Amino acid sequence: QVQLVENGGGLVQTGGSLRLSCAASGSIFSLNAMGWYRQPPGKQRELVAAIASGGSTNYADSVKGRFTVSRDNAKNTSYLQMNSLKPEDTAVYYCNADVETMSYLYLEVWGQGTLVTVSS
Image (cartoon, rainbow, N blue to C red):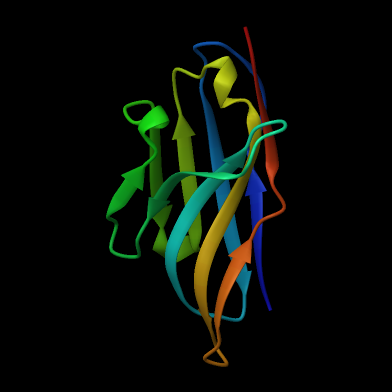
């Protein structure tokens, strides 16, 4: 019913920048909180940043001051601007959203993930 499609991952050198996007589509009545998670190789998935429908944000301590989460409600899209990237930021990044569908169902939806690799 609802899909999240991520784009923007890739290979970047230490200190570089990338911008990830997450576009939601389908039977969406309202798009509530949206989040970005990551799963480094051999580790558990962790929250990187989240943004509420009203725009309030929160970040993991490890990315504060370097990453910025934003959203365009008209486009049902969330963005993660990542600056000053470090090798430890290497991970598969996943988009997540809390969605109310046209059928008044509340769903938690995940994207397919996009790989970010930061070379030293």
